Image 1: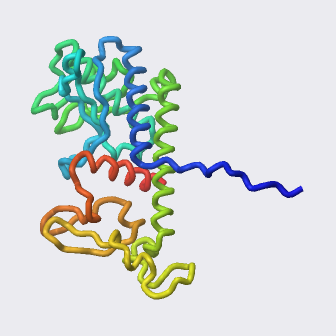
Image 2: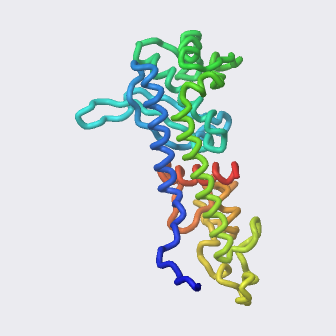
Length: 271
């Protein structure tokens, strides 16, 4: 018997901004799980941001005490997780949370665990990092800063880690869909310059992609390039003259806007 077509709308793939919010929620849950085992650990505002502010020293995260003012709660510290970290296994990102949690415990206990503007990690930090379940190795320049989560610690946080893994994987799936959608709109093959020969649908001429303003990217000094959607979503393409990224009209490289870029690029690198 022939069945009627369902009127149920197709599910809408999660959009990058929504998935980024889910990631932050998962990271917040992980932080609360750490607090449950270490009650002295302060509350913190969890952010996803850039880890490449210093091109010579990529960082996976940072701890900044009393960075935020929260109504009725006073000051609250900040934990930043680098968007680049999301291309790593979720357990490594959880390890970064534990690394920053060790700094949080030092702050709560009024222990000086770093010097040289927070770059050098001393023996006090080493002890705290081991306390939260990390192995610690010494770096020649920055002290006891090389940390790694252990299998035993992962077992202590099974539920929180599973939640983070699911959020990271959802992020990757969402951005793979975005990349495929960009190809389907006529921007041509990955790495090429903008679908000027028409798509497989036989539309001929320049093709829709050849006319789309979104295939033209401009930098801060006005230079322009044409690049496919797939190549564009891989990450910033920088101008060698002004040092600014080539962007689509209306985009910016302000820190808030960079978060979506970083989450998207991390997902595509891990795909």
